[in-house]
Length: 195
Image (cartoon, rainbow, N blue to C red; front, top):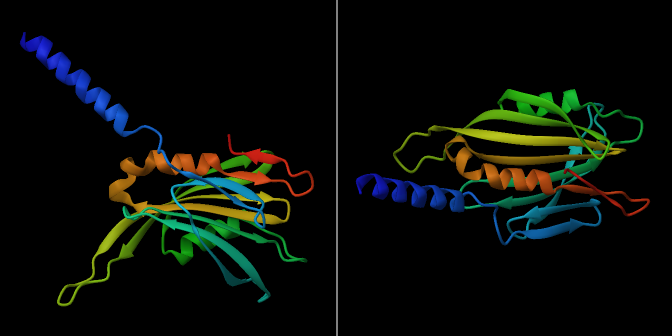
């Protein structure tokens, strides 16, 4: 009888765990006609533009789409067009990302998206908390998972940034985010998917 009860409890626990890690529901399909991409996001994003500068000092616009969740998980899609007369280097972009975040490159893989070359990056970060009055700041370990794609003269940078402590809880959401990304080719308006 005890064995049957233990087996039943194990089955209930297993099925509740399986239910808790199912694919996220209620995500929206977000399309950026200007950015020529489609992606699934957990909610309507904030869209902004910022000015960036090439190594030669030439300014160019960079477009950002951001979703921040209560868990601390941040989804970002950035894109820009390579400035005429310059060459994009994924190595330089990777090194700049790691350096600007004072991070450490943990892993890197070559990937592609419908024939477009890309990189899959895993960067470890330590971010300081803002202390309350009378308290000292502390360091929190973060993970920055990023993908960089070079689609002709357009560069896409996708990032999922989250506290290391919630990594196992957000992995399904992060995978859904990356796998749903599609580039819409301008000339034929066809879609290139990550799958």
